[in-house]
Amino acid sequence: MHTRSLRIGRTWAATALFASFVGVTCAHAAATPATAPAAALPAPSLESITTPVLATTGSPDATVEIVHMAAPDEQFEGVHYRPRSSGYGRRRSDESVTQIHAGFFDPQGDASRQFVLGMRGGPLVDPHVQLGVGVDWSHITDNTSNVSHQSTGPGGTTITVQQDLSRASEDLFPIVAFAQFSGDENMSVIPYFGASGGYEVLHLSADDYQSNTSFDATYGGWGWQAWAGLGFPLSGRTRINAEAFVNTATPSRDVTDPYGVTYEERVNIDGVGMRMGVAWGF
Image 1 (cartoon, rainbow, N blue to C red):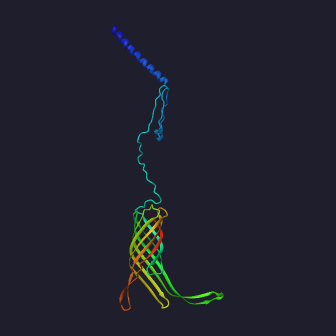
Image 2 (image 1 turned 90 degrees about the horizontal axis):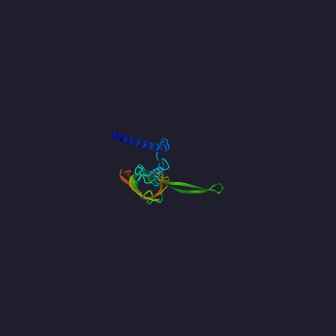
Image 3 (image 1 turned 180 degrees about the horizontal axis):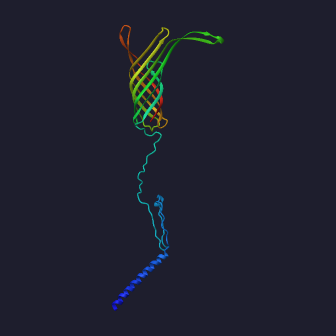
């Protein structure tokens, strides 16, 4: 009887302790306001990640601080920096440069200067080295005349009668392969120099009206040129070039006289000149 009373007492004590715990829990739940289901939040931006955030939950007496701090050493993969190229950016080695120029050529021993027109072009095998081909045409015409007499026309106008005695023309065509070396394209004035070698064709024509004779001949031979100049950039791909050059060649031809004797005629066309033009494609 005593043992049974002890068991009943222990059971009653346990029941009372459980009822007390449930009561406290229910009271705390009743004091806490119900909260709505949390809505889906957007992905945090960089500002929201790096700025501390303070939130409170529960009753005023129960404050919970939630602090978000930026992760150290944040890295952004795939972001690279490449400087913007300027107007005189570095030339590519697969580009081709073309130049058109005009000027004059003064052969040694010739009192007259010849007009020169030509072009050259080729690829850049290096930002400072160009290889290519070129052709020039230099031309001069010389007329000799004589004043036979003068007379006076109506109103006192002087009439001059002029007789052409002779006419001569010269055309030179250097066809060359060249190599040219230039300074850095970022310079405000770009120095350059080059050399070329090839075949030069010379055509001479003359008419003597007094003797009623004519002369027409074509000469050919190997020659070379060298030049040095300055380039003045207009943009990243165009510039003005001015250069001085020297030409050396002695074209020749074989001639057979009326007696069947063959001999060689040679014409010396060594001289200097100047050219100015526009180059593009850098």
